[in-house]
Length: 136
Image (cartoon, rainbow, N blue to C red; front, side, top):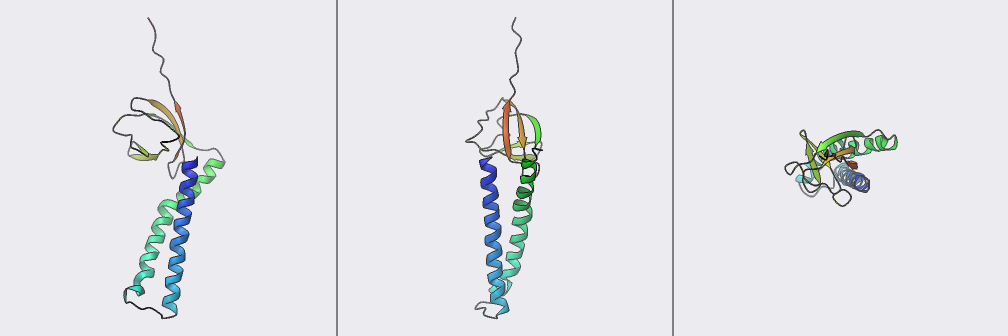
Protein backbone atom coordinates (compact mmCIF):
# COMPACT_ATOMS: atom_id res chain seq x y z
CA UNK A 1 0.00 0.00 0.00
CA UNK A 2 2.91 2.34 0.76
CA UNK A 3 4.23 1.89 -2.80
CA UNK A 4 0.84 2.92 -4.22
CA UNK A 5 0.46 5.93 -1.91
CA UNK A 6 4.00 7.09 -2.63
CA UNK A 7 3.32 6.83 -6.36
CA UNK A 8 0.07 8.78 -5.99
CA UNK A 9 1.85 11.59 -4.12
CA UNK A 10 4.65 11.71 -6.71
CA UNK A 11 2.17 11.79 -9.62
CA UNK A 12 0.12 14.57 -8.03
CA UNK A 13 3.25 16.58 -7.23
CA UNK A 14 4.58 16.18 -10.76
CA UNK A 15 1.26 17.23 -12.28
CA UNK A 16 1.01 20.29 -10.03
CA UNK A 17 4.61 21.29 -10.75
CA UNK A 18 4.09 21.11 -14.52
CA UNK A 19 0.82 23.04 -14.18
CA UNK A 20 2.54 25.77 -12.16
CA UNK A 21 5.37 26.13 -14.68
CA UNK A 22 2.81 26.22 -17.50
CA UNK A 23 0.89 28.97 -15.71
CA UNK A 24 4.08 30.96 -15.26
CA UNK A 25 5.03 30.60 -18.94
CA UNK A 26 1.55 31.66 -20.04
CA UNK A 27 1.73 34.72 -17.78
CA UNK A 28 5.06 35.71 -19.36
CA UNK A 29 3.53 35.29 -22.84
CA UNK A 30 0.44 37.33 -21.98
CA UNK A 31 2.54 40.13 -20.53
CA UNK A 32 4.83 40.00 -23.61
CA UNK A 33 7.96 39.71 -21.50
CA UNK A 34 9.56 36.87 -23.45
CA UNK A 35 13.34 37.15 -23.86
CA UNK A 36 13.92 34.22 -26.22
CA UNK A 37 11.97 33.11 -29.31
CA UNK A 38 11.79 29.57 -27.92
CA UNK A 39 9.85 30.73 -24.87
CA UNK A 40 6.82 31.54 -27.04
CA UNK A 41 6.37 27.84 -27.82
CA UNK A 42 7.22 26.56 -24.33
CA UNK A 43 3.55 26.58 -23.20
CA UNK A 44 2.67 24.27 -26.09
CA UNK A 45 5.34 21.76 -25.08
CA UNK A 46 4.34 22.01 -21.41
CA UNK A 47 0.69 21.40 -22.32
CA UNK A 48 1.67 18.19 -24.09
CA UNK A 49 3.74 17.11 -21.07
CA UNK A 50 0.88 17.97 -18.69
CA UNK A 51 -1.62 15.96 -20.74
CA UNK A 52 0.70 12.97 -20.94
CA UNK A 53 1.52 12.95 -17.22
CA UNK A 54 -2.10 13.49 -16.25
CA UNK A 55 -3.65 10.89 -18.54
CA UNK A 56 -1.07 8.12 -18.13
CA UNK A 57 0.00 8.50 -14.51
CA UNK A 58 -2.10 10.72 -12.28
CA UNK A 59 -5.66 9.98 -13.41
CA UNK A 60 -5.38 6.14 -13.35
CA UNK A 61 -3.64 6.22 -9.98
CA UNK A 62 -6.21 8.61 -8.49
CA UNK A 63 -9.15 6.60 -9.86
CA UNK A 64 -7.73 3.46 -8.26
CA UNK A 65 -8.09 5.10 -4.87
CA UNK A 66 -11.85 4.47 -5.20
CA UNK A 67 -11.21 0.79 -5.98
CA UNK A 68 -9.04 0.51 -2.87
CA UNK A 69 -11.63 2.23 -0.68
CA UNK A 70 -14.40 -0.08 -1.98
CA UNK A 71 -12.11 -3.14 -1.85
CA UNK A 72 -12.79 -3.99 -5.50
CA UNK A 73 -9.28 -4.97 -6.51
CA UNK A 74 -8.55 -7.33 -9.38
CA UNK A 75 -7.45 -10.77 -8.16
CA UNK A 76 -5.45 -13.15 -10.31
CA UNK A 77 -3.37 -16.30 -9.86
CA UNK A 78 0.10 -16.01 -11.35
CA UNK A 79 2.92 -18.49 -11.81
CA UNK A 80 6.12 -16.50 -11.30
CA UNK A 81 9.08 -17.41 -13.47
CA UNK A 82 12.47 -15.83 -14.05
CA UNK A 83 11.60 -14.17 -17.36
CA UNK A 84 8.56 -12.27 -16.02
CA UNK A 85 10.01 -11.10 -12.71
CA UNK A 86 11.81 -7.76 -12.78
CA UNK A 87 13.07 -5.61 -9.91
CA UNK A 88 9.94 -3.49 -9.39
CA UNK A 89 7.52 -5.20 -11.77
CA UNK A 90 6.03 -8.47 -12.89
CA UNK A 91 5.04 -8.98 -16.53
CA UNK A 92 1.96 -11.18 -16.93
CA UNK A 93 0.11 -11.75 -20.22
CA UNK A 94 1.65 -8.60 -21.71
CA UNK A 95 0.61 -6.42 -18.74
CA UNK A 96 3.07 -4.95 -16.29
CA UNK A 97 2.13 -5.23 -12.62
CA UNK A 98 4.14 -3.03 -10.25
CA UNK A 99 5.31 -4.68 -7.04
CA UNK A 100 7.02 -3.33 -3.93
CA UNK A 101 10.11 -5.56 -3.58
CA UNK A 102 10.60 -4.58 0.08
CA UNK A 103 7.09 -5.74 1.00
CA UNK A 104 6.67 -8.85 -1.16
CA UNK A 105 9.38 -11.43 -1.83
CA UNK A 106 8.55 -13.08 -5.12
CA UNK A 107 10.78 -15.87 -6.35
CA UNK A 108 10.78 -17.82 -9.62
CA UNK A 109 8.72 -20.99 -9.37
CA UNK A 110 6.14 -19.61 -6.94
CA UNK A 111 2.44 -19.66 -7.64
CA UNK A 112 0.81 -16.63 -6.04
CA UNK A 113 -2.58 -14.98 -5.88
CA UNK A 114 -2.18 -11.21 -6.30
CA UNK A 115 -4.67 -8.42 -5.73
CA UNK A 116 -3.84 -5.31 -7.75
CA UNK A 117 -5.42 -2.01 -8.68
CA UNK A 118 -7.34 -2.21 -11.97
CA UNK A 119 -6.02 0.90 -13.74
CA UNK A 120 -2.50 1.61 -12.48
CA UNK A 121 -1.80 -2.09 -11.71
CA UNK A 122 -0.04 -1.75 -8.34
CA UNK A 123 0.10 -5.06 -6.45
CA UNK A 124 -1.33 -4.51 -2.98
CA UNK A 125 -1.60 -8.09 -1.72
CA UNK A 126 0.28 -11.31 -2.45
CA UNK A 127 -0.77 -14.70 -1.12
CA UNK A 128 1.41 -17.69 -1.88
CA UNK A 129 -0.48 -20.76 -3.04
CA UNK A 130 1.08 -23.87 -1.56
CA UNK A 131 0.63 -26.93 -3.71
CA UNK A 132 0.40 -30.06 -1.62
CA UNK A 133 2.40 -32.99 -2.89
CA UNK A 134 0.75 -36.34 -2.10
CA UNK A 135 2.98 -38.52 0.05
CA UNK A 136 3.33 -42.18 -0.76
